[in-house]
Length: 609
Image (cartoon, rainbow, N blue to C red; front, side, top):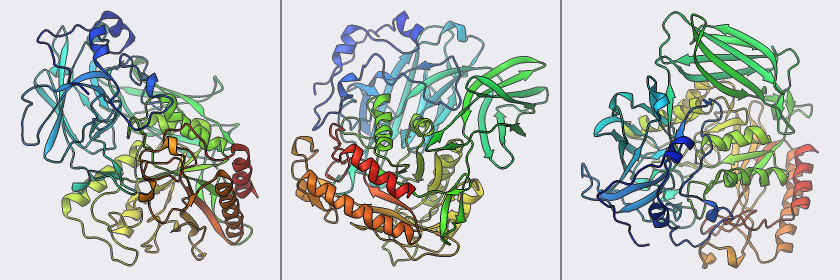
């Protein structure tokens, strides 16, 4: 792609962009952006609009009406990692698509001895005068520093968690504001959590994501405002325990919370910020995959009876725990009843956006198809998605097993835990805590998985206990596959092609964390033509009939294992990913390889039989 040079005269932000809440560009700017050459496109690739990039509100469980999206075309540069500023600007990048992606318009690999620089200008609406202005980043991989108008306003380390900076004191009184961001990312040459990203993609290791990869946005708030909601359902007492944190919990402030069902108020409570408040639900409706009912929630912060801040949210009433079923086996109980959980391993990669789905409809699509195929669970594999992904799982009724992104060294199935250096252990625990706290309110998430197949596995028992202390309301699968230490709520094995199961136990459920991997090669939908380099333990079917026959046979075996005590299973996988061709969809999402009706009947039969 040709690089676009920056003119000395700054381009104006149009008033229409300010009114709509996102920065607009002149026709010259918009026409300067082109999708970089890519091996595959998705049905949403050409729907990406550089004037209106991912415009949906990024935080559905704490919504304020007034906000401003600043995604769009920014200046970018790649410099040496040791540089304290760029020597010049290399061109335009479409934020928030990773610099390695085609949708960024750049599609360049960034090495650990390099740093990415971003620069943009934005206007602060006049009606925000007197408000504090918060700058939100959905996710930046990995080490970010932020300046506004030349003043350093914050820094953050972590590739998967959102962070917020109050930039009010750095803003100019009028005119455009300039923001600069630098990002350094060692990818898999460092010990930080990075999942399946690789500087040398091959086999089950994929293209890296560096820099900004989720929405960047601004929000005006009062001097004292709501900073966090924590919601814990109890289906036995029919109450939601709500804790509303504010940035200043001085005396004189009151929280008022109202729960609504189908637009009608069903409960109300008032109390102090930072204290547990109970919303009682007389005619409670439970959340489940078959009935994903969500209550709306309005939360107001008041001082002396006057509204200071207000956010809108939602919650689901559900309970996940272990229990012994009538057949004598330990099962996974949802809302007091055993439920076989079955779903695909979901990598969350895209051929056009890598870590970032091209549009919100695309983000939702994979969940919709998974639901239509009769699954009731998704295992999100060593990646954390934007909040809107979990919102759609909540809305559509999809259980989620959430992996912590892996990092550091790997061990074999018979090896002892690794010994991490202090900084590595600290970074892992900090980001794990942020993952759990940041997603605590989603009813769809039912299981936390800190380690996959010995990838970065350390202090296994301590980490399981750490998670339970942070969140006693969910199950812990520690680890999934390989080096089981007898801890956590489940004993989880992987078997390819499988299926198989571990021995049943009295105190833990037996689960199959990965199996399947049945591949169908569709040559017009490949990331690489040489699929012979695909992982050897995945089997290849050369016809749809053969693929269906193998899947049917697996489902018969899985059903038998279920009746022998198996409590859950994860099939590999949702889509093809780069060199892997074992998805039930192609990587470009243009073909579903299975007959939807037949697969749905098979899956539902195993789940509900």
